[in-house]
Structures are given as structure tokens and as C-alpha cells.
Image (tube, rainbow, N blue to C red; front, side, top):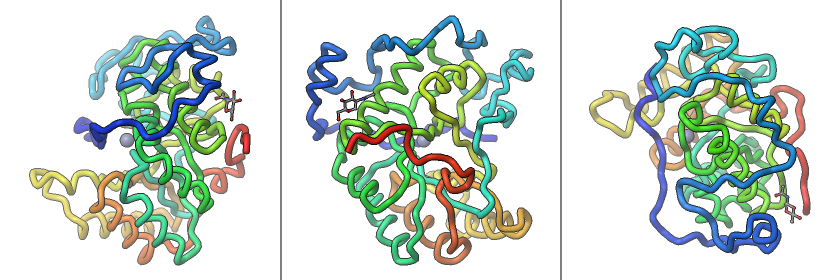
Length: 287
Ligand SMILES: *[C@@H]1O[C@H](CO)[C@@H](O)[C@H](O)[C@H]1NC(C)=O
Ligand SMILES: [Zn+2]
């Protein structure tokens, strides 16, 4: 599976979301971090319970331990664990890498058919587009975490992984007053070390059984366009008997337009991730 090209949109502009006082009290900081957020210790994280698996870079899957059930690497071998979500009784879309200026266009079109979807958001984009995050949440969509700044987690230390998760949670809490339950690892980068950290936050990984590779349309060299994705999805829909969980992106207008077209033509009836598995929407809500 080719997930080497990073798909991410990070705008070089100032954060719009104020840094809340409770976060200053807890971290001693006064502003949102950059792409390498500092690790802030949390009393409920026990590093002695983190599964010991060697770090690896994206697509570096030769270490035999990565092939073992001890590691259960999704990015290398599509391995899933008992608490991973990776499919759905009704073929459903999920969107990563927002919020972005195109997110609202997507949601307006989904609303025409009263569809609710699941959005896996980046902390760095939440603090730039807090009102888009809030509007997405207010429209009833499920907001999940996609880390703070889209790093490939299996290449990071335990402390760096905690930092990527905690800062994304804080951005979501500061924007809409909730703590996420659902987590999508960037590039599908997850193994049992990452899972053992994620579970200590009470969160679960959401993977997929159908990758649209919608981002490949953005590079001519990939020779992939809307019609290719559309026919792949249509075929999967028939072959998988209307079940499945799809990976798409809402950070670019072209992939948003495709998402709308797929929704209107292939999967009019959809479920959110918690509906797929009968789970809760959020761990906690404050407002
Ligand atoms: C979430 O935000 C509330 C304030 O709305 C704060 O009291 C609480 O400590 C925050 N919790 C986390 C885990 O961010
Ligand atoms: Zn992503």
C-alpha cells in the first residue's frame, strides 16, 4: 500500500483560537505549540504499561517483529486488534485532515440528505479554523482526533506520541468542550505500542477497509482521477455487499467535491463511526 506521500495541509498563519486559562494553569504555557508540541506529563499515563516495540519509519517494514502479532502493525501489514474499528455494517465515509475552508461545503451537501459523518481533525487546523470545527460539531457530525500535527506515530518516542495525542485533545476541548473517543492515526501508522498509549486515554483507533486514495488525484504522476475513484468505490460497494468504512480527505476542494459526488451517487444512507459499532460519541462533554 502506498502511503508514502504525506497528505497534509498546514497553513502558515497565526492561530485564531485563544489559549485557555485552564491550559495555562496545567501546562505553564501561554500559546499553542508549533509542529513539535512539548510533552506534558499526565498522571494517568503509565509508561511501564506501554508495549515495547522498536520504532520504525513509514514503509520501513523489514524488522521481523513488525510482522508478529506482538506488534500488529496496520501501516505495514494491515493488522487490526480487537478494539480497532475498520468496517461498518453500512458503507460509510470518513474524512481526515480538516478542519479546512472546504469542510463546510462538504457538510452543507451532506445535510441535504441528512447524513452525519465522522471527521478526524488535526489540532493545528482546529486552532486556525475553530469556527469551522464548531460549526461541524453543531451540525451533528462526530469529531475525532487525527493527532496534533500529522506525524507518523510509529517513528516517535512514547513521550512524543503522548504529546501528539494530548495536544489534539486539548485543542478539541478548548474549541467545543469535549474529549474525543475516536482516533485516526495519520498514514494508518499504528502498532501495539501506539495502541497501548491510545488506550490509556480511553480512545480507540479507527482504520478503514477501503482507501479511496483520493489524494492521489492531486499529483498528475499518479494518473488517477475522479472517474477512477468513483468506479473503485462502486465496485467495492457491490463486492462488499454495501458494508465498509472509507478513507477520504476534507482538506482540499477536489477531494471534497468527490466526497459529495460519492455520497450522492453511491452511499446515500450512512452511519457515523459510533453508530457503526454501537459506541459513544465522546468520552466526556463539558458544555
Ligand atoms: C476541558 O475543558 C474544561 C473547561 O471547559 C476544563 O475544565 C478541563 O480540565 C478540560 N479537560 C481536558 C482533559 O482538557
Ligand atoms: Zn491524514
